[in-house]
Image (tube, rainbow, N blue to C red):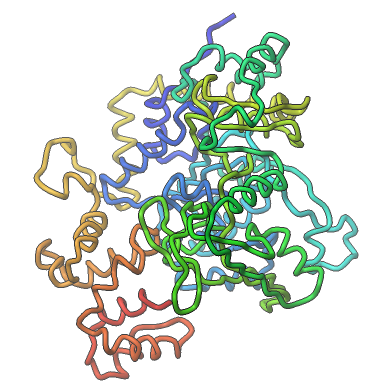
Amino acid sequence: MAESIQMTQQDALKILKTGANVFLTGEPGSGKTYTVNAFVSHLRDYAIEPAITASTGIAATHIGGMTIHSWAGIGIKSKLDKYELDRIASSEHIAKRIRRARVLIIDEISMLPPETLSMVDAVCREVKQTSEAFGGLQVVFVGDFFQLPPIIKNLSRDQNESDSQEELFLEEVKRFAYDSPAWLAAKPLVLYLTEQHRQDDGDFLSVLSSIRDNTFDETHLKTVGTRKYVMKDIKDNIPKLFSHNADVDSVNLDKLSQINMDEKKFVMAYEGREGPVAALKKGCLSPDELSLKVGAQVMFTKNNVNAGFVNGTLGVVKEFDSLDGKPVVLTRSGRLITVSEMDWTVEEGGKIKARISQIPLRLAWAITVHKSQGMSLDEAVMDLSDVFEYGQGYVALSRVRRLTGLYIIGWNDMTFRVHPEVLEKDTEFRTLSEAACKAFDEIASVELSTMHENFIKASGGRYVQNKRKKTKGLKREMGDSANVTMQYIKDGKSVKAVASERGLVPTTIVSHIEELFESGKLVRDDIRHLASGTLKDLEVLQNELRKDEKMKLKPVFERFDGKYSYEDIRVARLLLE
């Protein structure tokens, strides 16, 4: 039997650099995130900023990106009609983002339903005005289909029944992104990483591999059994993973009760028809009644990149605002955020049919296995006795690096099983990956370098033959021009000061700031000092901007007869709450 061809991170990287569409996969710990980060770094070296997205908010936090739903402007929609597609493509904010993109990365692809991938494809084609898959972008799908599959909402099987959004919540079915016509149109090369970088424990690796290839037996079960514990014998500060929200809620409420501080409650408000409201509540991670205390561990449940958080951001309640009583959260990145209510809505035909409003937080001493996907932990406590879907146990177990970091309370028969369809598909992926690796191994290094150079040029990058030669100062450290600007802005410098120091015009600096703001690398607190010269007039500018739905600059400039520069108006627009 011929020895299988191994796909290393470097092999994958040299293929990614050609601009080919790619599905980057491999076991947990094989280095998918590392490879993506290396590719992103390579692109930024040549002033190409990739669109970095993920299927879920918590996955987006791991890669420093945003959800694919937000990036493409599709929100929670399960389908797009011509009206919605035109509305999204006509949005100046979204269209600008997509037009500027050259590379689209989608992480945790296993959790993205095929219909969602098709919607992203449709929006990209419409904005770019081309029939090419994803508008001609290089697409990089990243993930592992052995991990958690998507739960999607299915329309009624009766084609004559109502097509309204209430019908989206009738039945749950599981399908995979590779079933999407958009996946087939993109024709991604499969790059199946074969190295292991997370786990260095042979016995534990054997357990995980046996689950993955459906050979789990009594020997593997005995190995897992050596790490079985009862909860009272486990240290209290180890993260706890559960398969059901009820168990998570029990732990979180118990921990909250142990804090000797006043409790403050936030009650969800809602409006609209009962069916859509119930569906919104089911999909909302914040509870109907949120109880918080100073010192409570919390997790954000909604995206607001401009405010400095996304779904999955973790933090601690430091205080309650003295004026309005809103919780003030210190995130793990060190940012203090006063958290106000946000809305979740259901729309149909451009009209809101239902709305719920709540503080976008939930308690976070314990989390579900679903929320742990993508994490890498030194230790974890897990009760897998109520695992209810394929891949759930595998995801939980593979979060820890070594067997000694595993504290397992219990398990059931489903814990060590993966989806049978994925087992079959995995064989196909491995075969395709070996073919890709072999094909690129046969390409001469000079030819491969030319392919890399051509992709950089086609993407508008600046290719320099001796790029690795050392250069001076900040530019060498930061890589691309916008990131250099970011460092100056975070140091508190004004637009004019940065422009002067860098030998650029203020318009270019503000363009950098807008790009960084859209990608979440800068938030409002980082740029408030830029309005210091016009702070007293900031509200006047913003009120004028609000008069136009598209917030165009020229009418505001003309309204004040040039009193404020276009740069001042652009900064005021960024600072709009």
